[in-house]
Image 1 (cartoon, rainbow, N blue to C red):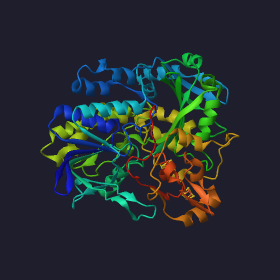
Image 2: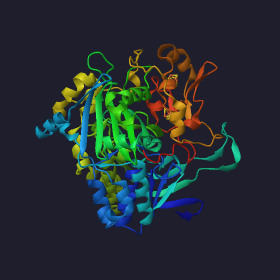
Image 3: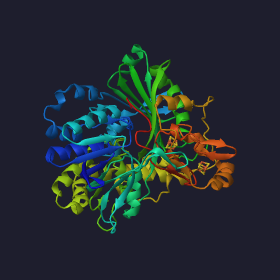
Image 4: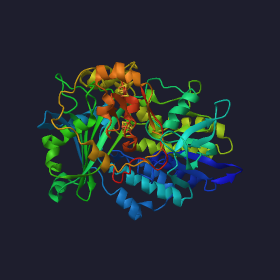
Length: 556
Ligand code: SF4
Ligand code: SF4
């Protein structure tokens, strides 16, 4: 960044160093090497805050790298990150703890009949660790001349007086104590002025949501989320060989959906190879669950104990863990300017998961994140002398792209399931685009006093889970988690729902302290933001802690 009087100044500021933001940086630097591009990320190192399944459709990444880095496929890094492809595509239905049915033929049939469900085919896709992919993309962006700055957390996006464009981003203050007093090492978060601001923060990004509010963008339907928890397990060589380096498992049904008798939640389990005798297992649950004592980690425990999964991981050692949310609302939840339809406004562009470009029929969004990064890079290169036109050009490119095509094809899926539940909603959603847009409520409004009837006997060990995510924050800083009104906890939530944040936070951040619910362990936070979206009284706010804090994922 070039120093300009008291402010730092850059041409293009990308907030978020995940696949979308880095794809934007790579595209832009390959088209216009002379432009100064800066990527900031709150994690200590690129990839540390990135967690996903992950199965990656390669086309967008190939398009990006073919023009930016000729011969890229020959590099050792490319071979390491993209060394595995799906050959065995197990789409399963689990009935109870023991029975499993491979229903892949149904997906194939749907594809043949041209039904939207046919999209759920992963054969030929890469099986990747998104943390490794991100680290690699970060290096490519740096090699092309972009500044990639981990440890820089954005606190706010600053708009000009008209709220039509941004003038830059203010970073988080460093060196405050728990009460907010300045310590000797206090450094005020500086403002980075920029001609273009690209918001690529991932799901439920702080600056993205602030911008949506300030610039009065609108979603046609509230964003819906799911919560994913994941473990990487070291297994025996025999187990790994039995599983194979080319198999992915996506399982519906038990333990989150048992037709007719319940529970009735949307989502499912995943099981992927990581390499070197490691297998990843995960559970993704729609955050519109209604059970006040439910915790996705309990469902993960049940999933791991299912006979089909257990054969591959029994006796293994958990070596890494993590949690994050996924934006599932799809087409209707993309934030747009109500007048112009732009995804962003003026010189501000919203990318990837921040915009909600996840296709739940494919259970994938990574390819769309990268594609949106490419489109953002192209739009900025074209409008470099007219930044106010960037969001409009970006939206035009997105609306003509495969991203928009597939978002549209899946547009009513998640809302239909949210409205009718998995049993009726999934079959109904076959009618795809013919269905109307059903009104759905925010996830937090779905909580009831119902209980999850498959609660495992043993409580989930959250301390070990948190330790394996290697999460860290400077202890002496203000809490980045705020309970807005503790009276609501005391008089409404605890008597009725028994303080669900204590149960569902995967890191055990919330505790009852002297009869009051408090975010007692903020330094354990995994930045999944589930608490902000699932507290039944919308009573929690998550802000960004000092840069460099949070989990340190390596193989997620
Ligand atoms: Fe309930 Fe939310 Fe208070 Fe937790 S913070 S006790 S979930 S109202
Ligand atoms: Fe996730 Fe909130 Fe718990 Fe942090 S405190 S781990 S954001 S649920």
